[in-house]
Amino acid sequence: MKVSRGASNTLQQAQAQADAKNVKGGKLKQQKEAGGVNPGLSAQVSLSQQAQQIKKATDIAKQDTVDEKKVAFFQNLIDNGKYQVDSSKVADSLIDDHMKMPT
Image 1 (cartoon, rainbow, N blue to C red):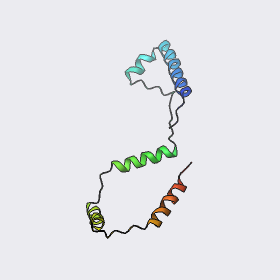
Image 2: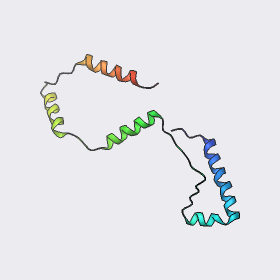
Image 3: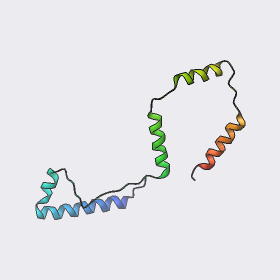
C-alpha cells in the first residue's frame, strides 16, 4: 500500500478549508452532529498486487479447515517410511513458483 505524506497533508488541508467555509455558513456543527461526513472529499487507497496476495494468504491461513483424515493418512505414511518424495519434482515446482513471482 502506498500512501504519500503529501497526499495526507493535502487531504487535511482540504478538510480544514472545507471546515472553515462551513463555520462561516453555520454548517460545521450540523455536519459534526450528522457524523462529520463531508461529501466533497473522498480518499482512495489501492493495494499493490503483492499486498493483495499477502492479504489473500492471510485470509486463507485464518480459515480453520484442516482435513484431519488426510493429515492422519500422510502422517501414517511418513511414520512408516512409506512416503516417497520426488525431489526433482519438488525442485521443479519451487523454481517454477519462484519464476512466477513479480520482481
